[in-house]
Length: 129
Image (cartoon, rainbow, N blue to C red):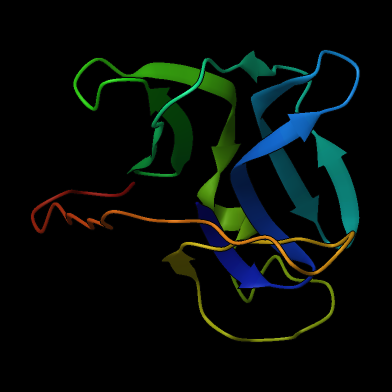
């Protein structure tokens, strides 16, 4: 699950394979004007489905996950939404901020991900200060 401004500024909550533990895990990559930051919190996953979410509340973004789609737990830091804007971007590569899904196999270029659904809900009357 990604909040994407451009290739230099994005947030990527993802399921990956951890060679050291021999298990799947959740991790967050945060690109901040071209500098990669790996959130130190990782969640080891059991077999089965996983649900990912990002909640934007004013100028804050919080990632979360769930094994059952009902009970969500926060993961990672709270990120600043202003970092996904024209004013913040050092390189001026405007795309506008997007939310979306991605699958990356940077090693063998053969893996795929299966997504059952994607849901986006906006709070139309939210006030951002």
